[in-house]
Amino acid sequence: YTLNNQHLPLWEPLFFTATTASAAVVILYLVSFIFSYMFLCYIGKVLSVRTAAHDFQANSVFNVGVLFFLISFVFFAIFYFSIGLVPVLSSDIENIRATSKIGSGKYLILANSFSLVSAAMTTAYLNKLSSSRKLIFWVLYVTVIILLAGTGYRAPAAYLILISLVSYYVFSRGKVTRSLYIYTGILFLITVFFGVLRNGGDIRSLMIPIAWAASVNFYNINVITDIYPLRLEYLYGFTFINDILAAIPGAGYDFFGNQLKIILAKDFSGEGITITAPGEGYINLGIFGSVIHALITATLAFIARSFFSKKRGVLYGVTGLILAINFGRIVTAGIMPALAFFLVPNAIVCFVFIALCRKIKY
Image (cartoon, rainbow, N blue to C red; front, side, top):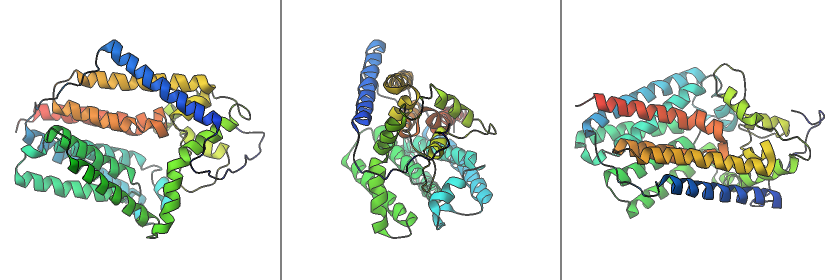
């Protein structure tokens, strides 16, 4: 896809602004998603939330959790040795962390999935473990946080801490207390700390990235609605086919967000453009495409919720929690990248975890 072999202008970010077209796309997407999901829940009669019951031995969950932590350490070791450096300590972290995934990204995906599932599943049974087992867990937990932070990405560590906190308070303690919000605030401060570290220790340099992160997705939708279809034709489903092929190792395709960066002649550090869920729908078929996209994501959310709502057991509930929170990545990453990088790997690892817990009775 080219535009008469001419470079498109490089827009400057306009913080917290949205054109009428982009605002209409976002609002229509939200309304379509909410009403579609509510309608599906009403039809399926799954609006009520069932209370999960402990159906696995805590020691079995702990043993499998330790095994999965160790497996994640192996994948982290392979990742770090394959790239030969620690991205978070690099002076050009934005580009290094992106290029480090070329050829080694699969190890990072597996390391993230095994560590996340292990942490979330084990914290659900934390109050049932002995003091010595709790100590072992916390040593492994802190170690994996450090390994995740070393990749140069804050989100994986933040997701792991958030999901394990919610898992602990919902399934282990059985209720949400004020301390959950306190720990979430601490999580935010830790994320800010790593952001400062990533910006060379200059806290002032962190302010612009924070403002940019809060507005960049609206900015991207502004660009998409300005270009499509006035200057470029709709893609009519090409992004989905492309991203499916990009998720296949060795296929030689790149995710469309990275391609869009080239198409729009963008020049910035890091990876591609986050086209967002509304933008992904619009770029394929305009307003109608955004509505269809919202229907698809609402259906996926309903299927996941209805499936796990019928299961009895804490580990199934934790699985639903992991997938539900990671499902939010579709909002920025799009359907296929979120499925390939987060939802599918996490789902597979969760079911393997549960299967092993059924086998291990000690």
